[in-house]
Figure 1: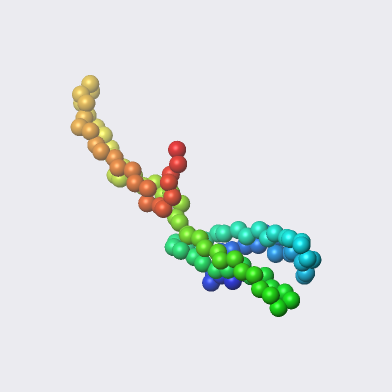
Figure 2: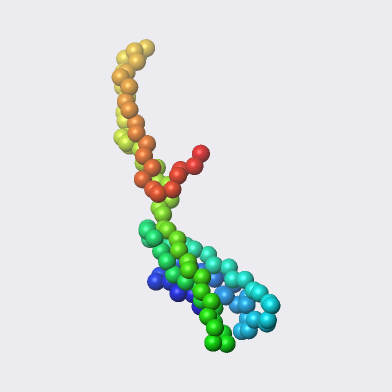
Length: 104
């Protein structure tokens, strides 16, 4: 069982069916859990397995981050000038408005 306030943010790719209804003594199984946050900020929940009156729980946490969002200001600049005479320079500023690095 998967408990998470926004259930659509976590996904069991195989539907959680890899473990079956029972687990033999000494056996093990695994469950894949994928995280796809729908909003910014910290998230938490749990993955719970139970059977035979016993329960095992794994605490889950993650953080929703905005991808890199590059913004440039000014967004437009028109130059004009006399032939063979350099105009004054104009400064352009690039900002990453996201939470993640823009990479290379």
